[in-house]
Image (tube, rainbow, N blue to C red):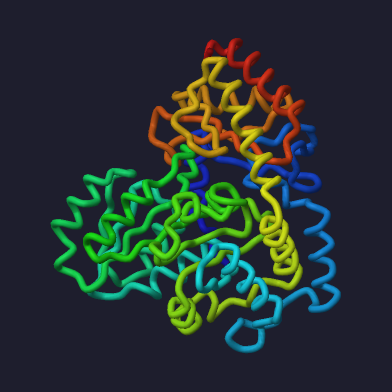
Length: 392
């Protein structure tokens, strides 16, 4: 057996650079306040936007699904792993998203890896926002299409590329995140769609951080802007606001028919287990019947943002519950996060290469599950440590 010395050298380099990490250990469910590495802390780093990850109705739905359908699908969906539960979920998601059809994948990452390569080919062009998620970047790499990158949310740059290159290709697919996860800004989707229609392009929106957050009861960025029927591929996640695991693509019926034959993760990997599907169905039912969860999420987010801004912290230009507290210097950012943890607040540091050098931040994710008292305590910790470190 090889000693893998080349990997050990690279691990040692990570340690020397101060970026080597050990995974934190969460004891119990992912809630607004948790036990992390043995310490009770207010959790400001979870994607559990609506508090669904430990919701009693979702847990009961998962248990019921196990009792009726077992613990695993037992096969890929194209053989015998396609259960009635999967069909029910896709029908409910399509109705919820106000689209013709939905196809569910095992994760949001798998969704981007499976869809992009299946709907583009040699002779096509893909144009991707410079700050798109890693799963989009990897999905684009799997495609045989040519590619280009436009400056983040820069519509003039996107049109420049379209003018220069569109006529050279059969199809053109414009891809953007719906909500950008590091800064919390929303894609200029109406402008992107207008350019797509002007230059005869298809549009593709990865709405991982818009699903369950934007639009009516969390229907997403397309609903937020009223663009139903004008976006070809709308990607959603089932592991963030929905609180479980998985991803899906929403769009036209022909899209689903094609992906059932060419979506590689769906063809070559076992389907989502019954427990996950049962819980997701319950989550969609909850969101279909009330706006209380998204209302609470936004109420908490606005409260936290206002308090942080009043203290003098730089919270960037976020338009969503994602709240970056921008420190700048990488070492100070890491130290600030560590001090917050010691004070009972977990806000993970985000530094280069995830964000540009000099823009280090702790990214705060406020959820519907937080109480006002918890947010007050978190803000108090930010204020005290921020002043001690001369950040405010």
